Structures are given as structure tokens and as C-alpha cells.
Length: 207
Image 1 (spheres, helix red, strand yellow):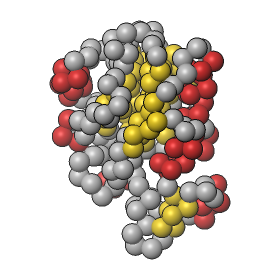
Image 2 (image 1 turned 90 degrees about the vertical axis):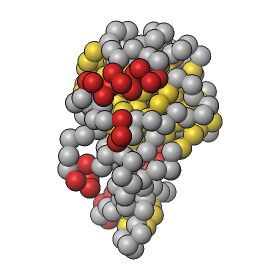
Image 3 (image 1 turned 180 degrees about the vertical axis):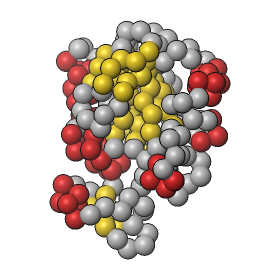
Image 4 (image 1 turned 30 degrees about the vertical axis):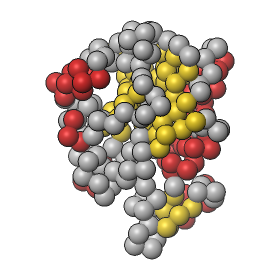
């Protein structure tokens, strides 16, 4: 489990914490360690930019970002190469699931905008582990879409720095970045590496 030092109401799970999407017991153990409820508000992730507000636990619908103002209600997204992003504001917290499709769609910036429109401007953010530019090999079509974030894998092919692109959508917020690559680090799950359904969690809550 990773706790960003400047976001007390945020955490990212590790592989040793268990599969957070499918194993409710693992989710309960993580919640106990965090001191929060194991009844989370989650979304059915579709790799888009939709943002929903959660007032109760359970499935909040089709979206890739969920936020809340309810004290003690954890909101969460699940990842395994995509990035979990948490934003905190006075009296509110949001989490976003950001893979390359979501980053291109602007899901992180959209969550920030939705929170601002509702009177809760984020002041801090955290980006969890995801596939790094060291390992995210892509074709020329994505290189053109991410022209400002082109990079090179450790084996010399074209890649994209998704975390760098997410940082731009956060627009200068004080942001903690994990810098961990899920693809080559056994501490996290990687769907691209092994195709398994196991997922990490990015969790946020209003203290």
C-alpha cells in the first residue's frame, strides 16, 4: 500500500494487497489498514471521460472518474497499467482511471473541472503507478496523438509518457507521482504483461 505523503485521504494498493476489483476480502483488509469503510463507491470503467458524483457506496454507473463530498465514503477505480489519479479539495475527493484513451479524452481535466464547477476546486493530486515510458511501446498513430509526450522504451522503440501527459491535465496542482512502472515491477499488476484480471485500486476519501 502506498500513501502519498501530502494526501491523507488517498492510497494506492500494491500486488501484495491482493486483487482489489474481484477479491472483496482483500478490499476489506486494505480498508481496515486505511481505517476506512470497505463499502466503496466504484464505477464501470469504459476508457472515456465521464465523471459521476457518488453519495452512497456501490456501482455509480458507467464512467472513468468518481468524486464525492460524503465524509467516510471511499471512492475507487481499478487499474493494471492504466494510472489511478486522486485529487483532493476542501470537503471533496475524486479518483480517475486514466489509460491512454482516457488521457486523450481528457478524463483527468474533466474531473477537475466538474469538481470546480461544484464549488470544490482541487488543491492537490497524486498519480499512482502505471506503465512507464520505459515499457509502453506504441505505434506511430499514438505518437502523433501524444506529440508532446513521445519517449523511447528501454529496448529502443517508440513509447509515450502517459504520466507526463496527466501532469499537464492537472495544470500545476501540487502533485505527487509514484514513478513506478507496473510492466516491469512485480509490486504491481500489469495486464499488458500477463493478461490477468487482477487489479490495483486507487482510493480516495473525505476525512
